[in-house]
Length: 529
Image 1: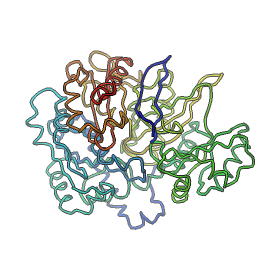
Image 2 (image 1 turned 180 degrees about the horizontal axis):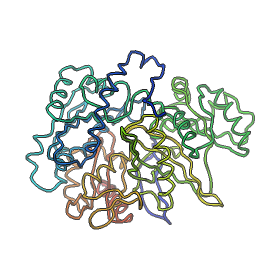
Image 3 (image 1 turned 120 degrees about the vertical axis):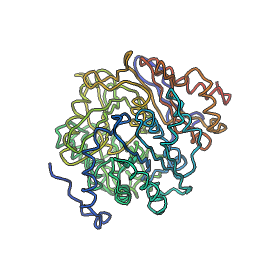
């Protein structure tokens, strides 16, 4: 692991320099899979019908007359060795939702975590809103399971009837209630049924549309360009055969990427770089396979590939390559909204690990991202997808200009969700799709956000230390100017030397400067500056 692992956002001719990180119209039909065979599909569909009436209140801000409860369960169901150490902090990543208490006076938030959460973290978020906060605590319930295991949070809740009874009681005291998960699996749907609370997410039968294979099928149906590749690979030999076939259709390609179907944040990818080696064999694949997650050996990666399947794609290259994304949501009435565009900040051994994002995307990307995103969104809505999702792209500049390729669909909250909603919760502005800007009363707002402001030396700090530092700094969020830094994942600092930050400015340059100063603040505190 390198001595220093954090993002450096020094601007050089518009480019970002990053340190490498080690680390049909009808309702959906159930797939014939074992885990959905006995699922109560009819009951879940009936429950989800309530979403149509609730849809106007599906934001941090809602009409004052709407009486609602938001049940936040930020549970991650994924086998990602690189995240095990900080899973508890990821469960806290959506604490910005307590801002809904100030924005919506008839909202009650129930926030559930695996382990006890520092009370001061909640105080910190509420302090970013002006005014008296005494009433807000009456409308906030924090539930800690007290279970340090690596089981997903949703599983822990399902094992505890008294916790579910408490959540259900609060939910049913309000006219409307909503279960807000990080991602949707059968377990989240089962929890929604147990609580009798609709789920802000898609039907578990449609989760496959967010896999690498499923994404490619949606791109094809939507008529959006996507990377050349081969679907349905599970073995080293099938990877070798796929590379041979892709070489035939795309002569001169020397690098390929293998993607596990349900990989997250680029950590389910692996680079294969056979160069001019031909033919390529299964043994060559094993020897040349470089997983993005360094906790995976080639054998580990291939074992996961055998279970879930995946795809092989050509490595897209050109004079310049960028990785933007577009965030959208689909309503129960199949309406599609574009919520934001971002330039993704990537690192890792092969440059495929998601580290953070800048909002908005580069000016020349916003139009094509919005157009292709809407086409993909309409196709997903037609198939019955509901809720927030994002689509990742690769933009390749060649002699004739920029070319866009859709890469994957994330049917879940992700690394671009919480900064976008943090901005919405902290300001009085709104996203303008025509310009691609977020417009506050006094002009646009930009941000840089990351979960990876990190250095091994930061582990000498405690969460209280970090909150003290931001409180006493000149970069803390200012509710008057609506400029500054909002931290998240603070509890990861002592275990992983890592915190998250959303730096919001009136210009791109101001946002980048605030982000850089966040790292400098921490560097100074531990003697690195």
